[in-house]
Length: 185
Image 1 (cartoon, rainbow, N blue to C red):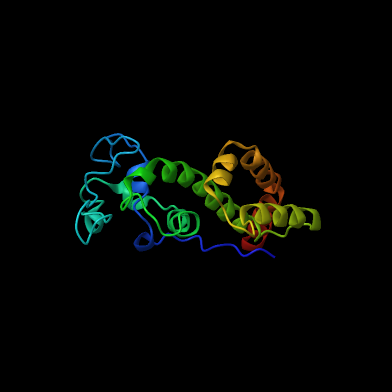
Image 2 (tube, rainbow, N blue to C red):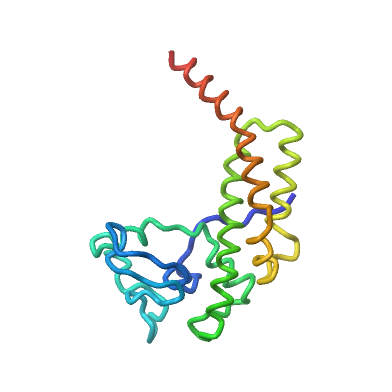
């Protein structure tokens, strides 16, 4: 059986990819507009705190509730350590475009793993368990992910296939809801 990586963000082991890779528009969740590929102005860019958020402890109060709510589910730190061998765009800005591309793919991997892990709590049939195991194996390759494999994943039909599988499990959730209704009546 394949080992599912930890699906919990640890910003101290990342390189602030979410603070650079994403764009956002000024709104109730973001106090400013920011372009994709540009470092957030709240990101420290020099000194010992380079790559850290200057307002992390006050994000919501400073108008960045979207940042406070965001969770990459561990995709950022996994990408840095497994795909880029600890290298970062912070130390080598030329890495930023390829890191952003690979980050999108790793976000998909972690999103699908999180959804599948949740689905595995359902009373799956043998066939459903077989499909679940197949998808986990593909999302946790023995030799790990590469920049290229992450890019290929992003444009493949695999995400749709897993989505269709998850939708097909709806009958389990409906049955559990019915069971819970009966037990509280």
